[in-house]
Image (cartoon, rainbow, N blue to C red):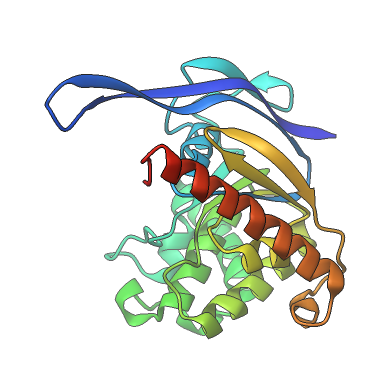
Length: 265
């Protein structure tokens, strides 16, 4: 079943160029994409290709200029608790403890204190941070903060989870640990996840499908038919290497195209 349908989506911005004149910058140029219910799909491409812009549209943080985005066959609305966003910079409230950060979405929905505390503790257990419920964000490591950020989104059980390079700022060991954790949570709850990354390895490790974006459109869909967990396939699987080489070629091809237009972003 299709969860998200994007049809001929365009997004433009008014900018001021280097000589002070107003110009129109087209970021999305007729993007088409279907996202299946319960799948893990990754958006990958050169910087400036429109990955985060499309994620912001799905989140309701921006509005498309043309085209349409449907979720469950209905037009995307700005106030929709069935979507959750995990940002790169954690976005935790520093004056609230871990448990109270997890309760924010439930508070907004009017869930009573006792019930929301029980739900929040269930998700703290899921991310293995039960012992840290009364700590504040500044007392946590980067990996712990990101686990809290993920749990804070999951706690109100959105059907669509949007993740904008959530592990980019982490060291390699913590990043790998959270990738494993994310897949474990996804397999347990089967939420639809749309994930943005610049890492080819990360995209292959996590995704059912990879949507390669170029010049404001999805130019190619790459299926990843490898069993999970996939870390053991990184150096030994010909299929893993085949997909990696294909994406590397697409990225190099796009870099050369941008260079020819003097358009590095």
